Image: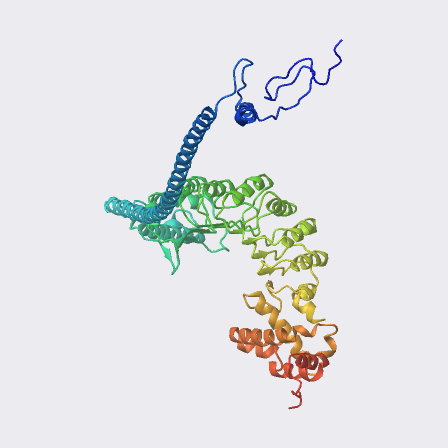
Length: 570
């Protein structure tokens, strides 16, 4: 056997190209054969993905150089394409920036154009509105002129009889006088309406007023039947009067007032029909029932029908009408659905318990937007006082409340007084004629509490209780508040006792207190110089002197402000 194993391997390895040997070894042949090209060939072949076949020999140097040059050419082409791509990307970025700039410019232009267009549209809308107003006014003038032309051929058809003739026909002297006077008024009013003129006119309001004496008795049906032809003329003239109403300026309030007018049923229906849809701003229907509970004028149902047809209504007065329980819901609905309605007078219209129900319904059936409410002489009792006080405490829009001549007592007044502590809108409150022992005493501490500066400042500064001494005469609550504080300081200054009442007041508020006192004193004095001279017993400078002279903290404040050398005695 041949023992020469170390010098004679069982099998020769292939050219060192990185391939595994039979026995799993990974030796690399590093001999520098073939002019040193075997290693480079193996490296290049390994990383280029090409391997020599067992039968092929290693590539020559020229081949390797050629392959390298080919690779480099490809790399160069790739780099050129990448540069082209980068150039394209750069060009795109530049174009994007240009487009963004153009977009910003377009947005600015669009915004400017939009604003300009909006302003132009607003001007056009204003012009269109102006044209519409002019057209409406021209149309109203045209309708008004047509009304006047038609009325040129009109004549009053009802005869006005004499008083003697009526007496001779069986009427009493009072009835005859009533018929003659009412007929004359109806004739004159109808003539004015046919001429396009408001029979009753003031500086800021125009309207129609029919008023009879409130102490007239309820006349017989025959007397009212005698007046029916005149009521027909009046109703016809009123019915065609709308064009004249449409010419009123916006700041002019139109009204229709019926005070203690007596009507028979047919006349009432004629008046109702003529008033349906008429754009009056105020209606007043005060009936004369002469205490027997039987209205002699417009019925409540007729009045509510007229009200429901008029959405421009701002004020409604229907006192001395017998409003029943069955009218409450309809009346509340009319009040709450008329957004423009700000004043409601229901005085002397409800029997016992019904007045409480009416007030409760008004306060609870919706948001009450009234600024003035008259519920005087309506048998209002303690049954609704808590509800009323809770309502007032919410600071509603109500500026005037009339509860005179009802059945409210001292406990009710206390509830109202508590509500007024948080109320800053109610300007006038009428409580005279109730069962309250002393209205002024019951509300004094709410309207002006002199026990301390804080209590005076925290009083109600806007409400005037009618018939009582008021400390809230100025329309601005801040001025009334200042007047009360100044008055209290003035009273205490007479005995130089202000400082002892200051207690733990922070001295830092001293400059504000003194400045406000002078400023409010001046404002209050300008408003009513005579009155404020009566309630302010000293001049503000005297109060300033006392404060600085007597209050130790004042000197400390002066020193902290760098006034160490100031002497209060200088």
